[in-house]
Figure (spheres, rainbow, N blue to C red):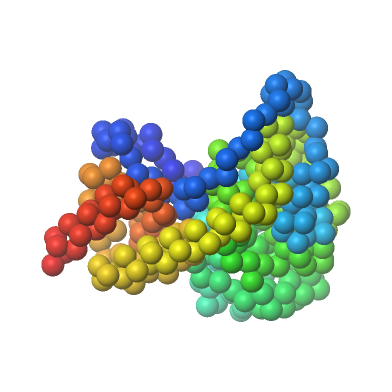
Length: 328
């Protein structure tokens, strides 16, 4: 299985720390405060809630959506809905896309962002993370829509993973996902900080969503997840405040890294940079109880999320200063 962030049990097993600052997953550290739930939310089998889907459609601007148990469920199921095809996956990228499209008889290849336009010409499916995880790179909306048109003309798909698009949705194509050949994945795990709820949404045409729903089977999303997700999607005041906070903290992290000679890229939720000695940096931080995301290949680098409080900012800053001194 591909490696992921958030694996604090592994961190504790390897380094023996207990008081971890987890910067490895790129999640909003100021998560949405889940409302109190009625007892029957835990007791009843979870019927699909049309009000949840309606809230998602309004929030994401999509005409049709399907609620799923995290976008991971859709990432695993979509390759099963096509006959063996030629797949191009943006790279570097969220590793689960390449992992699952390489199964089920497909011919999958990873393509750099610079080469994606050419890959559209000879692929049946193109998969793009936008913004990209881990680099933060973005493909302009107009380019994505042109790729969709080209792929759809020959029965192909453009799959756009917009898990990190909530803080800046200018390049989102969710509002166009009713058009043939376009599939958009959205998550409440990143911006809302609710990764443990396991809730995501797929925007696409009705026929494809029906096929995906049948492939995934009944009771996909738990009753508690549906209630918490609906509250978060409808809370516009919290969303507005949180975007402002995350943009400010993202700028703070960018400036902090730059002050220590690190030129980073990313989004409001994370920063990434190609690190000359990523294993050494990762080890340095881990020894100080700070868990960052290590990328060993393609390209080698480090991704850090946002600290949750001022004490955590201070610990990270001190560790960064020590690293800078050691490097010099």
